[in-house]
Length: 170
Image (cartoon, rainbow, N blue to C red; front, top):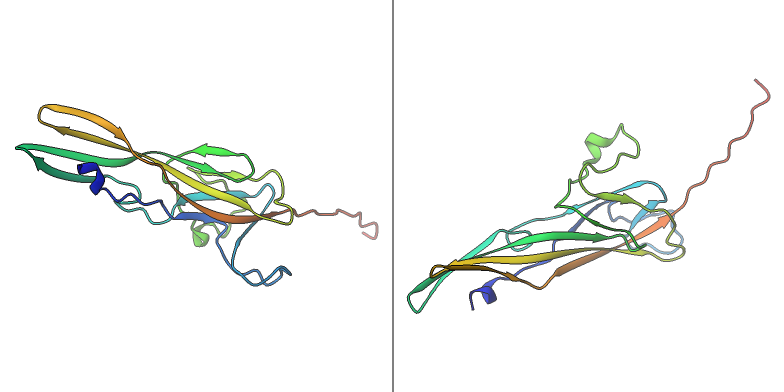
């Protein structure tokens, strides 16, 4: 009964690249995330709280027995949409101001790099949180697996190519 009082929510996806309107894109004017093959993608829980990350504790008394239960995220699995899957914690938010003078820096805690384009479509990045509840009461204790919560975001992955030419005039 106590476990039913937990309202567990998926995390919001924090991700660099951020979602914005790309005016150079002929497809449309809707906001989306865009990155390039080989460029680091940073991932983090966008707004963590008790209901999205835990711990979330509830106590109740049933028939004279007091039970305390605490829900928390056991694992966070990120899927890139192109077949890559990683398990990491809540991640480190990207800060454009502090990273302005650095090029292609990997996240210190959670991220990946796309190895191919998304073609004319997008990849679906997803974050799946696996929850567990630890409880104790009446001299007993245990764990209860909870349903996984998930959220997703779309990212378009393109490719940049450069051409080097010799300058014979110098």
